[in-house]
Amino acid sequence: MLIKKFEAETETLAMLKVKEELGKEAIIMNIKTINPRGVYRLFKKPVVEVTAAIDELLKPKPVEEKPLTNVAFNKNYMEATIRGDILQDLTENIGSPKEQEASAIEEKLDQLQTLLVNQMEQNEKLVKEMQEEKKDIFDIPCVKLIYDQLIENDVTPENARVILKEVENRIETDSSVDNVLSHIYQKIVLKLGQPKAVALEEGKTKFVFFIGPTGVGKTTTIAKIASSMKLQTNAKVALVTLDTYRIAAVEQLKTYANILSVPLKVVYSNQELLGLKEEFEEYDVVLIDTAGRSHKNVDQVADIKEMLEITSEDLREIYLVLSATTKYKDLLQIIETYKKLAGFQLIFTKLDETLCWGNILNVRMLTQAPLSYMTFGQNVPDDIGKMDAQKIAKQLLGGSE
Image 1: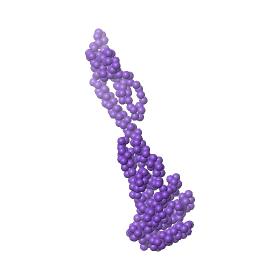
Image 2: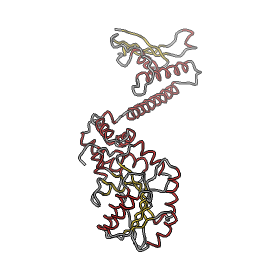
Image 3: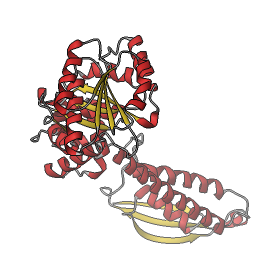
Image 4: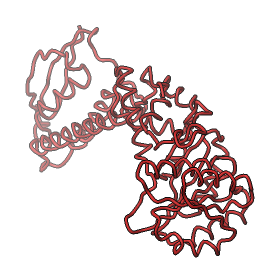
C-alpha cells in the first residue's frame, strides 16, 4: 500500500493532484486545512492537505508519449497532455496576486475541461472519418472475383474500378454475392444508358450518315436498318452511297436497294450532296453510306467533316460504326479522330465474332455518346437490334447472353 500526502491552495486542486499521480482508484483517507503558524501566517494562505492511498499494483503507469496516427488515437495520451497544461496553468496562478481568487481558478478549470471534451469529440469524429475513408470495396470477398470477370471481358481496369467505387456505399462487408452482383449490374445498365435509334420526324426528310473505319460492316448495317424501317414502320426510305472507291460496295448496296424496292443514288462529290434535299424531299429518311476512312489520314478525315457540314444540323444524324472485335487501343485512336467531328451515336457490329463485349462499355464511358444499334451476323434484316443494356451487363458479369 502506498500512502501519500498532497497539498494545494484548494481542495479541488489537491484532489486533481491525487488523480494525476495515483489515478482514480486512489482512496482518500483524510482532508484537512493547515493554517500557517507564527509570523508565516501574515504572508502565507492556508493550504489543504489530502492524504490518499493506493495499492501499488493499481498505481497507473506513466503515460507513454506516442505520435498521433491516422487511425489509432491514444485518448489517454491526449487527456494526460491537456491535464498537464491545466496543472501548469494552475501552478502559475497559485503564486498570482491576491485578486486571483479561488472562484477565478474554478472558472478556469471549467473552461479547460470544456476544451478537453470538445477536442476529444473532434478527434473521435476525425478518427471515424479516416476509418470510413479507408473502407475499400475490395475488402468484400466476392468483389475481387467480379472485378476479374469484368477485366476478362475486356472492361478496362480503370472503368471497372469506377463502377465498383460508385456502388461501394451501397454494399456492406457481409453482403451476399447476389446483392453485390445486383448493385453492380444496375450500375452497368445505367452507364450504358438507353439506346437511341434513327428518329423520324413528320414533314422532314432525315439524312442519316454512317461513318467509320474500313471493314466494320457499314454497308450491311445500312441494309439491315433500311429493311427494318421499311418493314416495321412502312417508312419511305432512300439509299445514297459515297463509297465510290469500292465497286463491290456500290454493287452490294444496289442489290439491297432492288430487293427492298427503294431508290439508290451514287454520289461522286460533296457538291452533289447539295441537291439531295430537293431530290428526296418526299422521303422520310435517306441513309447515306460513306467510304471507309483511315483515322490516321488527316486529309480523309477533313473530307468527312466537309461532307457532313453540307447538310444542316437539324436534318442530319450521324452514326459512328465500330467493330466489337477491334482492340481497345485502336478504338482509342479512332475515337480521338472522330470526336473532332459533329456529335454522333454509336453502332457496334460483329458481336457474334467475340465473347468479350467490354469495349462497348469502355467506348460509352469514354465518349458519353449514345449507344444505338448492335449487329450480330450477316443476315439481312434479322441480325440487328437496338443496344440491349441488360443483355450487355449480364454478358460482362459472366451470365448468359
